Length: 87
Image 1: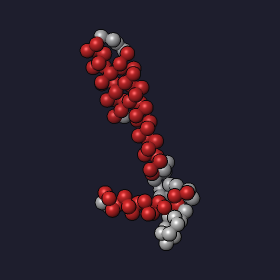
Image 2 (image 1 turned 120 degrees about the vertical axis):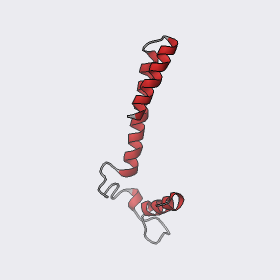
Image 3 (image 1 turned 90 degrees about the vertical axis):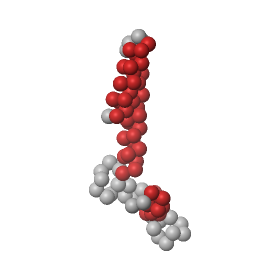
Image 4 (image 1 turned 30 degrees about the vertical axis):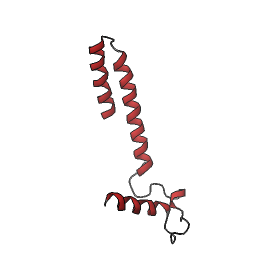
């Protein structure tokens, strides 16, 4: 939502300043929408489509990584993330 609103406001302001209505409004609305879709895609890649704890079950990140005592690559990655950023 923020990308669309921000793009719309920026495009509207540039259109008023340059007098090229609705060129910048349309361009920045499209860019804002693309940014919003990219954010949604990144969020779904990180959490999965459902937040019930089964996201990514059976994928390559859930297979044991070599040399880590049988932990999945996802577990190792999550532990490293917590160590860098806190709980």
